[in-house]
Amino acid sequence: MLGLFKNSLDNKQKLIIFYIDSDNKVTERYIRVIEIKENSILAYCFYRKQVRTFNMENILSAGKVRKKVGA
Image 1 (cartoon, rainbow, N blue to C red):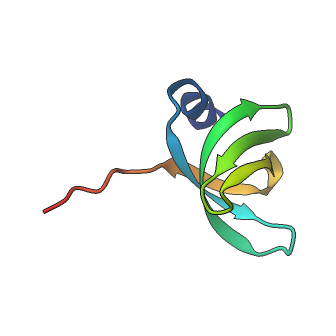
Image 2 (image 1 turned 45 degrees about the vertical axis):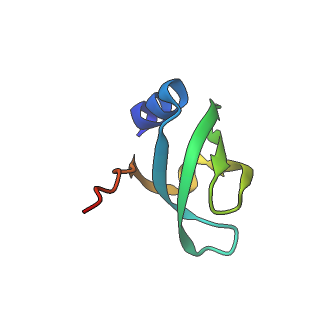
């Protein structure tokens, strides 16, 4: 997963993560990594439209966002 975050940081690539929020609910977030810290990542959250800190231990999964192909 760390490799995905580094790739997002280096290439300004958008990721999707599944994250346990402060209310212990699983949320789906679209992010772009700004900084990788020891136990967290700083990222722009497209859902909240602001820079947020995400704890690594609360990230359940992460993946690349696939671009939609139009008809």
